[in-house]
Image 1 (cartoon, rainbow, N blue to C red):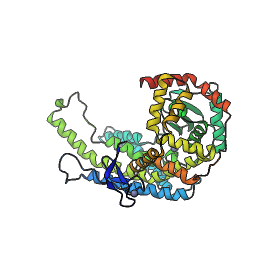
Image 2: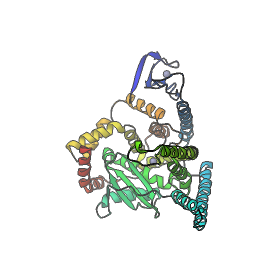
Image 3: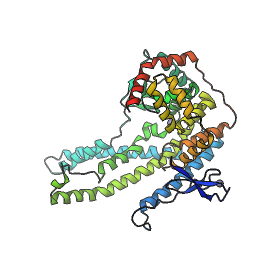
Image 4: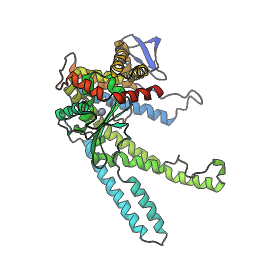
Length: 435
Ligand SMILES: [Zn+2]
Ligand SMILES: [Zn+2]
């Protein structure tokens, strides 16, 4: 983070000193005056007068996204989100999905018909349409290449904890539990069999206290029961088809593969330019439609994210949820602390101690990190709200009140779960040392 305090400028609202993220607009760290004000970035070189359209659009987009984020925050901080309802956005995504899927099937049918005209030349067009149709058919998210899959025999205590969370949330138990060396966690239904896969990144897992670990599993499994449009099979065509079309039609990809561009003849270059010219409108149109649909889905996705946070807080208690969110917001510092600890020890207790030291510094810094996230993590089609707002949302819901957890796990079981993972902690420690 490269914020700086600008001593000479003071806030018109409260007279405190202003800060800014370079390059960017000044804002007041005290009363947050101007936090959502974005100026187009003026290029250092070239003509300063000619602001490129893209930069203007980017500034406009950030202002709009900031305002939308604030609006969702205001609405949901008054009343915690409840189980999903049929929103207008969801309706749009489902109808678009049906239309796109039908369109793709028609494309394939037309392709088949044209292929049958062989040996007429229209046969070639048929082959092209078939190729395009297959490429546009919806695909389900695949399972990531797992670092390690933990069977129930290998990790009975950890599986028992995850099962207890699923049972409490009214979700079916996860089918596959995997771990990886990332500072992250995820959960989703993958493949045609829609198997529930939960992945825990060991550096994040080790950095958390037991209640925060419960909040983490609660948040992830909460996504299986909270109606997130990004995870529903019925909205997949709307959210992915145009992105695939844009990838196919990308005119910036070289159509002609040669070892060196100097081998291109004049005719090749002209043909390439022609192909690019023909593809460009299709590419930009696909990109625009993809952005619009992602924007339509993003508000529901953000709501689903807050709902998963609310589910996590109800399960693990407000303290666990707040610790989890604070750790995620401070991930830069905590990640470094865990990596350092992993250099000398593969004991998760040491990693946790290092993480705790890294995230226990003064509240002024935390507030600045919140502001930075609220200001910078803004895109109209972002599926996650800024982490700074997620932390503030938890505070808005609970205030000074401490909500007790509705699920607690015996300390012995946590120890057993860590002991089951000991060989993986050593493996991840080695990966962190080398990485
Ligand atoms: Zn101020
Ligand atoms: Zn989430």
